[in-house]
Amino acid sequence: MVWNEIKIHTTYEAIEPISNILQQFDISGISIKESIDKIKAHKTHQDKLYKLNKHEYPETGVYVIFYLPKSTKTNMLLNEIKKEITKLQTFQIDLGEHKYFTSELKEEDWTNEWKKYYHSVKVTESIFITPIWEKHTQGNTSEIIVKLDPGLAFGTGTHPTTKLSIKGLEKYLHEGDRVIDVGCGSGVLSIVAAKLGAHSILSLDVDKQAVTSTKNNAKLNGVLSKLTVQENDLLDGIKEQVDIIVSNILAEVILSFISDAYRLVKKDGYFITSGIIDEKEAEVSEALKHAGFHIKEIIYDENWVSIVAKKCHR
Image 1 (spheres, rainbow, N blue to C red):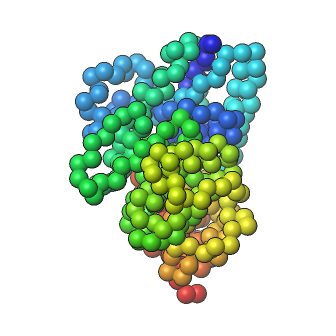
Image 2 (image 1 turned 45 degrees about the horizontal axis):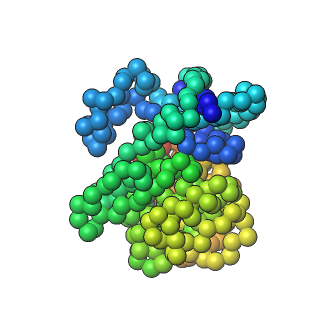
């Protein structure tokens, strides 16, 4: 079989929303190519730089890369995908160059092509995310290593919004806490919560592929028994109160369920939000305060913001 490799030249801001759209079209194996200058900033990749062909990398922004089997329906499907991605501009998401590049790959080339873009990532001093085909040697017993199969769904730990969420969990989660992960994707945040000592995690996503991905990745990490994974529209119908709700979703989506989050977080519990571009920080902060939350901390990474809100007495 012949496959089409499609590269979208876009911005860091657009990575997550574009990847969410691709998931809606049942496309997995999504990968990200940063500029060479950006890769140089990741010290963990210094030993691999000499192998990289700079002509395959964007000078600015990123390539979001995915694969479609070549057929008579491919062009129609790609046109539908382009329409949905263009709509993101109505949410003030900067798509940057927003150019598409298509090339052909044979079956044997496609199978492992996207895997070369993922490497072990040091998210914090003690938390590492590593793809299943790379070996990461544990430096000491306090290190937390999360193994992921990134091809199943988006959420590899490399995007700033995921890193911000993980840092929030590491700081505010206590042993024995009960957690809800809204929009679990690949399950990375649920798995981190489990490895940090959470008693139980309710992992929710509206996408069936994400539910499957979270279960598979949780099993890879030996924490499936701590997770309840289910297909659900945000927090609709959820009644159990928890110590922490974490959600790495677009700001517009977070705004739509803040009142539900306040209802479900226990007193002195936390709502850790991410996926917020800096232009939306004030709007989300005000909505959280209006619902009754106290803004505990705001963390920044590039143009992204994570807001940690605490439920206090009104």
